[in-house]
Amino acid sequence: MTKGNHNSPDLKSGKGSKDFSKYFDFSDAKVISEEEGKITYRIKGRNVQINSQPDYKEGKRRGKEEIEVHYDFEIPEEMQNFGVDKYYHITTYGCQMNEHDTETMKGLLEQMGYKSVDDRNHADLILLNTCAIRENAEDKVFGELGHLKNLKIEKPGLLLGVCGCMSQEEGVVNRIMSKHGFVDMIFGTHNIHRLPHLIKEAVFSKELVVEVWSKEGDIIENLPKKREGMRAWVNIMYGCDKFCTYCIVPFTRGKERSRRPEDVIAEVRELARQGFKEVTLLGQNVNAYGKDFTDIDYTFGNLMDDMRLIDIPRIRFMTSHPRDFDDKLIEVLGKGGNLVEHIHLPVQSGSTAVLKKMSRKYTREAYLELVRKIKISVPNAVLSTDIIVGFPGETDEQFEDTLSLVREVGYDMAYTFIYSPREGTPAAAMEDNVPMSVKSERLQRLNDLIKENSRIINDRMLGEVVEVLVEGESKNNSEVLSGRSRANKLVHFEGPKELIGTFVKVRITDTKTWYIKGDIVAEAAAVH
Ligand code: 5AD
Ligand code: SF4
Image 1: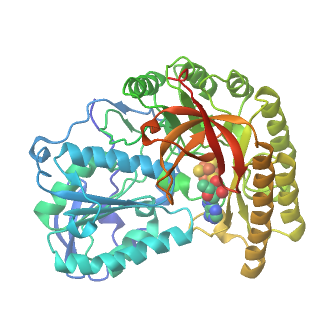
Image 2: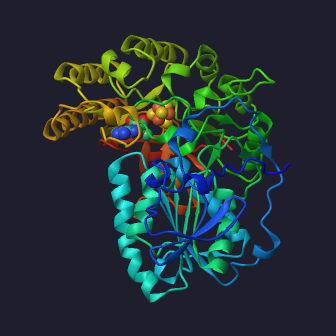
């Protein structure tokens, strides 16, 4: 199969138009050359090769066209040894999806002969895999680009790329070009497999290469991945169609598309064969898995049921949307086995009115009902969540609803955020009369409550014996080993390093807010 739908816009007619000028400042641009889907401009003293650029309108369109799966990925022959004797460094921001994309890019680069280097002063290629979810994530990247400028001046041969979610934002390409013109490549989340081509274009043309596809219905299988440790991530689907009003992800990650079950199952089986102990199935909204299949009736519940049959000790998944969390999945999770008891179930707010403005499509009551059903089916379920405070117009009362929901559910853990307006999303245009000082205060109160909850839940574990997958030495003390329980609790205990990569039973002797301490009772030999 070949890649047919390179979503290249009409660059010529777009030039100077209202929409197109959002991406590039063309006031002094000259066309130098053009061929199909690729135009080179001279802009601000630099040649810029534009293969395509982001477009939110195009990105929001959710077509009914078939999703193509490509199994024929290959690194172009002329690039296969291009990285020999060269070093790369990738800095990753944001979520596990980005971490996993980085593993793919590392896999691609290493197949080209590149080696990884920790000290980026020694790198020939530096990539920033960026996150766009909140403004502070972006500020970090722009700050980093400021630092990298000096390195690029010292080492003009250094190849510098910006990729990930920020590249998919309409305004970012323009900003990089005007303020950080020394960048060599900008490419989006749908263009990762094109990395070898982009390197080639950037090196041989010496132009800034921009390739950001707005809407991509395709899935590229068989991309190499460099995984480390004993825990592996596996994508089961890409993109998101939920369009929560605050969220940029549906624009940066494209439409929902599921990998074929046979491909996911084969990948997890292979990871089991290689000795991985834990797999986390990844998707922006894993509960929508399979909804895009037109030929089979197969959903996330079916996939999890099939995961139980694979000989791998632990299966996790992230992230869930409460709206699509169906009874089939609840029933399958209740079967336990290698399906662990930890469920990350973002609620975002405890107020039905705020949830409505967020377009989450469930009420406070429906969420609580879902939690109740999960707790019945999975009696020792451990729940964590994501919460946004200070959504436009959130009242004190509505915030109190969030606090009361947190008390009622009894989360073990929660990621909490102050609402950050994202340009182009509906919430960014909503009137916001909540002062920042109030938002910060609310965040503090919420965090205090969650801390208190976690402490109480942890204290209840005193004396219990938990199964721990030993991951390594603890960060602050090399005498102490650290690992995770099935419920994803961080556990510290003393023991020999030979235990790293195995399962042990640990009796809990002491609890802190964010981790628990214990003593080894026995090696859990029965668990692989
Ligand atoms: N502002 C603050 N938090 C956000 N999140 C997503 N978009 C925003 C935003 N604009 C949070 C949500 C989501 C998590 C990954 O990030 O809680 O679940
Ligand atoms: Fe964003 Fe998650 Fe909502 Fe999708 S479901 S729009 S990724 S918050």
